[in-house]
Image 1 (spheres, one colour):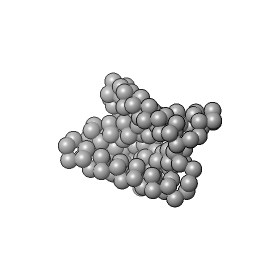
Image 2 (cartoon, helix red, strand yellow):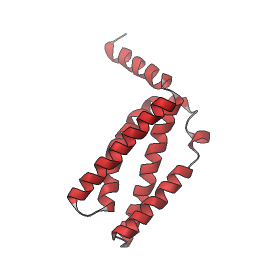
Image 3 (cartoon, rainbow, N blue to C red):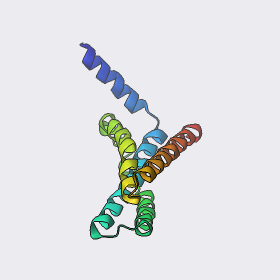
Image 4 (cartoon, rainbow, N blue to C red):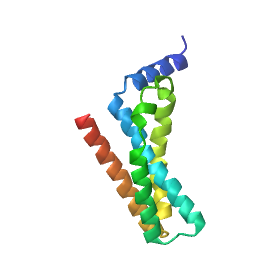
Length: 132
């Protein structure tokens, strides 16, 4: 067996042995970021560009993202897990930037908000590791 196939098998074993609580957190965190970003973008292109409207749309989208029943759909479908994990990690890296862009037009404030979102995600991930 070649080195690439061996590396892929090691990664697949890692992905399938990943605890369900971590995999669930990755999916839920992406849903909590993706849904508000999509809703805030829809409001942005409709002309609702002030901060209060965007904040309302983001909070509304987060509530919708929290209410998605991922436990019954995505957690037990194991054959896509090895492909989903890099996509989910990439989403956690880039979605805070999109959300910060839609929330505030000033670049400095966007950077601060993005850092706060990323710090919050890291803190929640550590708490999930400790309790999960």
